[in-house]
Amino acid sequence: MKIIVTKNYEESCKAVADIIINQVNEKPDSKLGLATGGTAENVYPVIVKAYQKGKVDFSKVSSVNLDEYVGMDPKSPLSYRKNMDDWFFDHVNIDKEKTYVASGLNNMEEEIRLFNEKLYGDKQIDLQLLGVGISGHIGFNEPADFLTAGVHIEDLTESTIQANSRYFDSPADVPKTAITMGIGDILKAKSIVLIATGDHKAEALTQMLMNDEVKTNVPATFLKLHTDTTIVIDKALADKIGYQ
Ligand code: PGA
Image (cartoon, rainbow, N blue to C red; front, side, top):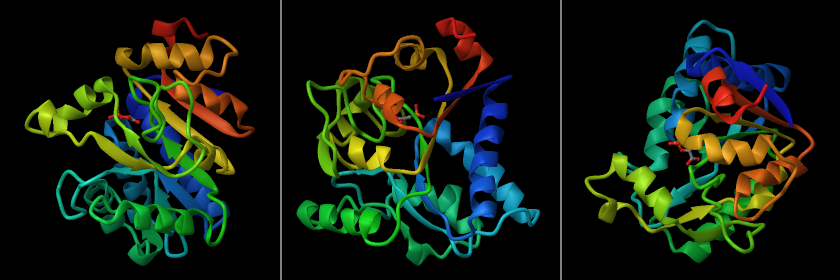
């Protein structure tokens, strides 16, 4: 894994945006794996700004998002489809027909079939963007005795429900299940970039960066098996986990 330590979170967002922009400039028809979440959110405005300055063109780009809550209406402001439209797709020249965020309202058997078609029907994901959960999840692959390789429905852990409740009226309103790329789907991306910030992510980052173990109770440690993964953290987080 390549580790980039930046001055602060804002610089991390710029570093990650640059990786995505360079990917698209080098391969205009890139297939991007995209992520929502509070940490990834601030990467998108940096990319949008670069687009507005004519530094990147998304007209040939396609994308697949990591996950979505089961039962979530794509039109809801809390849906990951709406997040992606608001944060990114509506501000650049990407063809929305070529973007896929799973629908939480569809029959899940049918949606898993469609998700797989989007992942494997044409080409491999060139670059997958990731955040990491307090639980150590990537996508919604939560800590467990075993992980699931392919697209599946995942029960969210209490820590994820608590963490995500900040977007809902109460923890009770947070959906309890999600449809997500599996750990194998994520590892099939040609390259991966993960962004993390904040003391609450220290345990996950310690397990990722400070030992050589791969454990199902910290799914993000599976990124150690991938040949082209970049982890972007800021100095405060690096200091917190003792990474030099
Ligand atoms: P966060 O979520 O950036 O909102 O902490 C990250 C994740 O759960 O993957």
